[in-house]
Image (cartoon, rainbow, N blue to C red; front, side, top):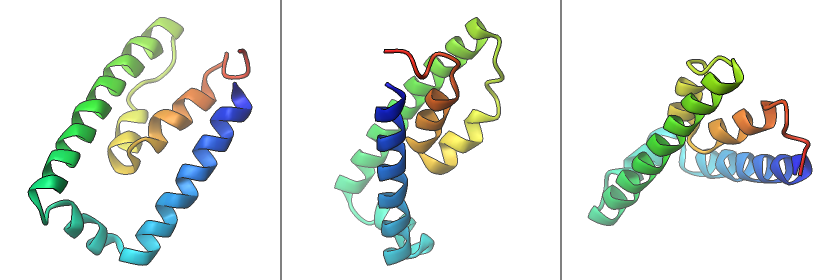
Length: 95
């Protein structure tokens, strides 16, 4: 499981860096607000990340881990935050 998480995290991070490098940070955010389809996608991602943050909060509470550092990471980096959170779980290497 850890190898899969590492692979997905690395691939998505590289993909994200390439996109932001191509569009620039301002251009990246500009594209997110330019069309109704982008608004819907942004709202969908916001809802999904909100649900993931709720799960992370419960999981962190159950396992005695800190939750709040993961909030800004997730809000700033999107899915990269929860992927890093999963990699840092003590049981990340278990199937």
